[in-house]
Amino acid sequence: MQPVYLDNAATTPIAPEVRAVLAPFLEAEFGNPSSRHALGVSAARAIDRARSQVARAVGAESAHVLFTSGGTEANNLAVLGAARARRSRGDAVVLGPSEHPSVWAAGEALREEGFAVRTLRLDANGDLDLEHAQSLLDERVILVAQMLVNNEFGTVYPVRSLARLVRRASPQAHLHVDAVQGLGKVELDLTELGADSLAISAHKIHAPKGSGALVLAGERPLRPLQFGGGQQSALRPGTENVVGIVAFGEAARLADEELEATGRATAAAREALLAGLEGITGARAVEAGSTQISAVQAIELPGAPAEVWQHHLEARGVMTSVGSACQSHSEHVSPALLALGFDPERARRVMRFSFSRYTTPEEIAGALEALLAIAPELEALR
Ligand SMILES: Cc1ncc(COP(=O)(O)O)c(C=O)c1O
Image 1: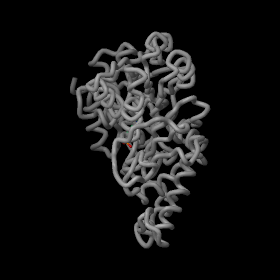
Image 2: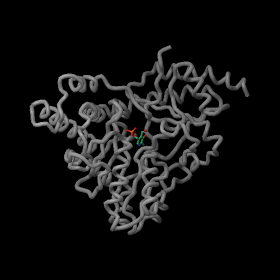
Image 3: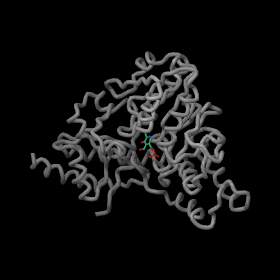
C-alpha cells in the first residue's frame, strides 16, 4: 500500500514549486547576503523578495519581517523579547490556555525572572473565555500571547476580540499571536487582527524545516535573544539561512494563492474521513470550540489508547499523531480536552488527523480501510 500521510499539522511535504525555487541556492547561488560582491548582492536580493512575499501573506510591511529558525524561535523572541523590553512598565504577562511549549516554557523563564504569569481559560465548549480574560487584564500586564489556531484541534480563537480587550485594559501590553497553524489555512492580516506580532513557520506550509519568522506590526520595543553581526536590524543577527528563507517566501506566496484550494481539499478529506468513521462504533469527532479549520480533526477512538491505534495504523503505512508532535513524548493531557470534560483516560483515546492541499481521496480511503480493519482486532483484545 502507498504510505498515507495524515500528520500535516506536524509537518508538510515540500511543494514542487518550493523545491524549484530553492535549488539554485544549493548550487551556484551560495553567496553571503552581507557580502558586497555580485554573489552576495544576489543572495540579499533573494532575501528581500522572500521578505516581501512573507509580509504580503500576513498583511505586514517587509521591513517588519524578522526571519528566524522557525516558529519556536519566533515565539521565544516575541515572548522574552517583548516582555524584557517592557520591564519598567509592568510585571505581569498573560498566556493563552493551550499555547505551544515555545510560548509557555518561555513564560516559565519569565516567571523565574520575576514576572507574574497569568493564564487564560477555555470554556466548556473549548472556546476562549473572554470574560475571564477581561478579569486577568490590567495595567500591570505588558505582554499577552495567544495562539490563533490550536495545533491539536484546529480551533480558531477570537484573537480580534481579545485584542480589543487588551487595548482597553492593558494599554502597555504587546499582543503576540502564534499563527503557525493558521498560515495557509485562514486569512491572515496582522493589522486586522490587531496584534503586535505574529509567529509563523515554513515547514507547516510545504517548505523545509528550520525557517520561520516573527512579523511585527511596526516599530515595537524588542530585546534580541542573540547578539552578533547586526543583521536584521540587530534584532535577529546571524548570517541568514538563505535557502530556508527563499523557500519560505515561495511557500508563503503559494499558501496565499492556494488558500481556497487548501480549504476545499482539507474539507473534502475531513468529511470523507468522518463519513467513513461512522462504520466504527464509538469513534467520535472531537468538537473543540465554535470555529475549527478543516485541516485538523481530532477523533476519539474506541477500545484502546490512541497510541495503540497509532502503532497499528503505522504498521499499515498510515501516519497520524497522538496529540501534537511536540508533546508526544510526555504524559501531558491537553488543557483543551480537560476543559471539554475529558478525563485523562478518555483524553488518551484522542488521535489527530491533519490534512493538506496534497491529501488525496485515495489516502483517506486507505486510512479508512486500515481503521476499519484495526477496530475488530482491538475489540477482540478487550
Ligand atoms: C502552534 C505551534 N507553534 C509553534 C510551533 C513550533 O514551530 P517550529 O516547529 O517551526 O519550531 C508549532 C509546531 O509544531 C506549532 O504547532
